[in-house]
Image (cartoon, rainbow, N blue to C red; front, side):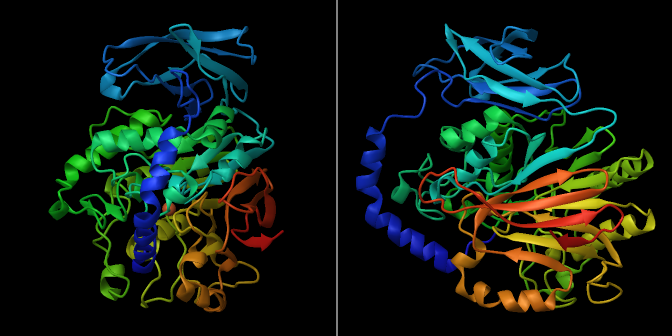
Length: 516
Ligand SMILES: [Fe+2]
């Protein structure tokens, strides 16, 4: 998401005043976790019989040789009922991260896992395999935009405190690439992202992930639930597209985009509990089947897209030559939706980064040219496909905009759509607020002033809140999909408090959100 000039100037001024003293204080503070497993454990990309397990060894300074790391996964927290075990290697060429695809598991069960190296044991993580067959209920958390210098990860703590999730879906901005002080003032909270300069090289991105993963609340969330993740722009650079980014500046010595993109992608794969493909090119789109309840189709709307146009380039916004998904991914997505419907799954859930629904009138300047509003022909291709193939019960999950939205998704909200009954709607959309990035309306008075106008001009908008940090809890049964927004009271100090702020429900067959 684009950073406003005002935000930039404010944060740059604050950092130059506070930085030296606070950096010294941070250097003296004890690091969280003094073991060789100081970045915790994580799991992700669960299937019915397997799950990815992750940890990292922090080698002694200068150590570069490969190290054997034993792993085990068991049905009990004490790790006595071991189901699978083995030895993996932590190697310098993968930043000493360890990833294991642990198989031989049973569907819909909790498992516990840990790693051992040199007489030390990692924290014990808990994970869960996907259910198979008949499923009564699904519980998912939707999160995004965890900006380390901007605030504490209270949302991750709240998510960790939930015992009952099938998975956590993170739709991107897991890290932010900016130099400290540019977006989120780490000096204020002693949450300075290393390296302090903007992350540009492979080494920079690795160090940035290490900073984030040193956070105890993030570690707790990872240790409690499997994550299903996809990146957004800030794992690369602000407003990234396949061939560049708004915040990529070769003239400032940041090198060529292809090298930066490859480094960012490599660090992402190293540090995230994601199952890797053999593709040499970026390939993050993939799907997950939750028995007969839902297919979760995870899209990469960031790494394969054409360049953004400006907000008032009306012809550019609707140009049919511009793609957001790329041809190959779009064909794959259509196949996934078609087979999900044919096989009788109750719901089709699209996990993706950016707001899908229209937030501007047709042929008018848009609020977010970086979101689907900036790729209107691509959005029409998706909606035309859903309509033509009669794909039903589609829920789109989004993040990126640092605010909470709920939408019906008709082809044209101002023509052929009935806002009270939802007639004409083809899907629903749930947008999660940021974990810790400054909420949209708190950063821009002009946008805040425009909030009533958004409400009155968007008939398909069913919920909007732009002043809070939080997450979305999705509770899914065969009859309905329920989304509740939970907000945390602050990100300026650590707290486990949260409140349910609002909820919407979509009855199956309706493609229509109603406040609950
Ligand atoms: Fe963000």
